[in-house]
Length: 283
Ligand SMILES: [Zn+2]
Image (tube, rainbow, N blue to C red; front, side, top):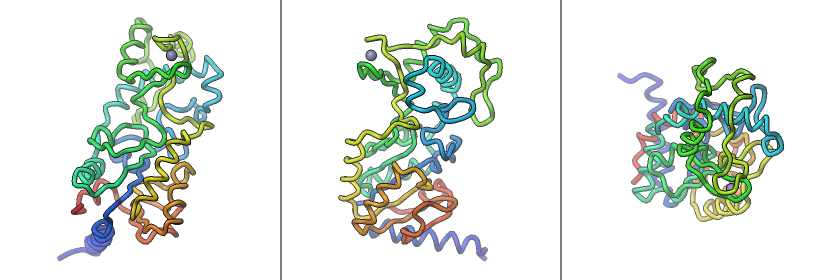
């Protein structure tokens, strides 16, 4: 005997299965909702997520570049939060999408997330629209450093720095006293001494136009678009929905709660990504 809930879920799985079976060149766009199931909090309105803010508000790109105290606060928080943030692992939704790629179902994957969970799951046909916290960029010479390598350099720069005092909040956020922040030594580029910034798009900055054009081309090549775990509130992702609509591509949305494009979708599913995607047969 099946409950109403089970029948409802079964019907939704069949609808999504039909959508996926009909697609030969599927483009998938993911957002914060896919990573909350891996334990990463969804700072919905703050597009780069964790640590990219002061205590009160998201960090602005211009402030970060102009202000040494803001960089000091940012890097101190980022340093303390890194071990927790980088320990998150892909969930069944990330693994399912990686598997779809291996089986030739996925034309391209675009993510708004900066947590590297798609890469950890093995996805390669991937554009990280807002960059990735696992890379650090020199704003002067462009040198790239893996974030894990920088963590060791920061430890050497701050041998006596005491970070445990106020510790981590349950969601992994970091609270530090003014004294702690002021004694923190900020790392700079080993090659040129320039400013270092995670390779992510902060508020007030724009996504690289070449990257945007690249994704527009992938959307135009696709025959359908599936949105996973995004409310599409941020324009940088929403614009690809507009391109898909211009091309009259069928759009399916898997997201808990309303999105900016529900009216454009032929299929809307209010389900958890990690529960639904592994049920789909990508052949
Ligand atoms: Zn440099």
